[in-house]
Image (spheres, rainbow, N blue to C red):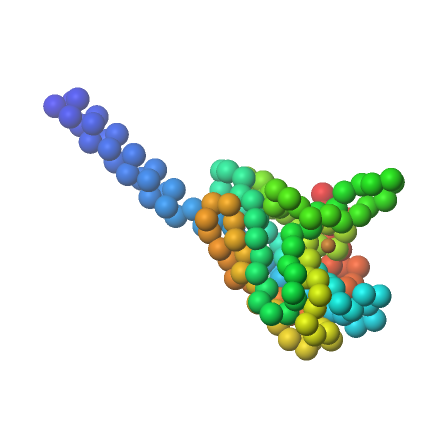
Amino acid sequence: MTHMKRVIALTGILLLAGCAQDATPGILTGEPWVRTTDEAQRPDMTAVYVNLTNPSDSDVTLIDADCGDVAEITELHEMIMRDGEMVMQEAADGIVVPAGSHEHLAPGGPHIMLMELNRELPVGSEEVTCELTFDDGSTREIVAPVKEFTEEQDTYHTHD
Ligand SMILES: [Cu+2]
C-alpha cells in the first residue's frame, strides 16, 4: 500500500506541475507609446515603444508587430554600434525578452519602426493599436498613445 500511496502522491505533484505550467502568464506589456512626429526631422517615420516582461523560464522573442494602417512598413529594429556610432537596423531574428527578465523598447534601444507613415501623429492625436506576435505563438495587443519624447522615458540608459 505504501507503494500505491507514493504513486498517488507523485501523480498529484505532476498534476500540480502541469497546472503551474498552464498558468504561465507569458509576456507582460507595459507603458506603450508612440513618438510624435511633431517637430520631427523625418515626419514620415516614427517608432513604438513598450516595456516587455517575461516571467517564464524560457526566452521569448518578439517576432512581428502589426500596427494597422498607420504606416506602410512596420519593422522590428535594434541598435548596433557601427563606426563608433549607434545606428538602427532591422532585427532579423526578432527582439529577445530573456527568461525571468525584461526588455525595454525605448529611445536608444530596440523599437518597433513605423515607416512611410500614412498620416502625421501630433501629440495626443490618437492611440495606435499594435498586435505583437511572439515565437511561443502568443500575441499581445498594445494601445500606444502618441507622446512627446522626454528624458524620463529614456529607460534604456537609466536601466541597470
Ligand atoms: Cu528604427
